[in-house]
Amino acid sequence: LHNRWMQLSMQAEALLALSEYKRTTQSSFANKYAPHNTSGLSEALDHSGPGVFHPLGKVRVVWDLCGLALLLADAILLPLSLAWDWHQGTDEPGSLFLLVVFLLSLLFWSVDICMNLNTAFY
Image 1 (cartoon, rainbow, N blue to C red):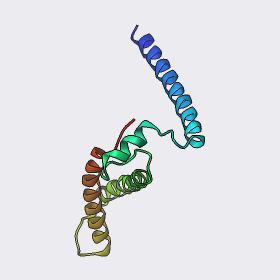
Image 2: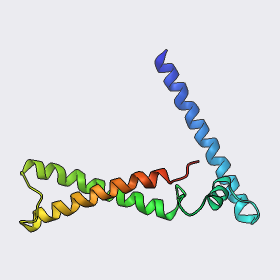
Image 3: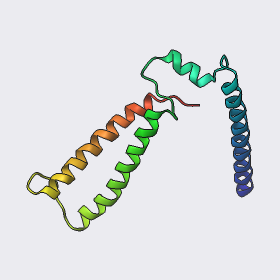
């Protein structure tokens, strides 16, 4: 019974996503050729002030790509530093690099919390 419920819920989610895609495609077609027609999210963001980011805006996309690059760097450097007992510090250039990556990562993920709190949603 549980498997059947999971299967039905996944089918329903797929159908909802497809209908949402068709609706947004039709509305974007209408928005392109009708200049007075605006989408609800864009209109809400226009009145919300400068601190709210559109989820698919340039700022959020660049921010998410930077997060992906930092996540890949962490995924590579953390196991290497643990396996070969690399230390962070200012003694050697390699250890200084690890310290800079650590501080950059700490700063980025802390600011990422604020970015996520100030991003609109559909």
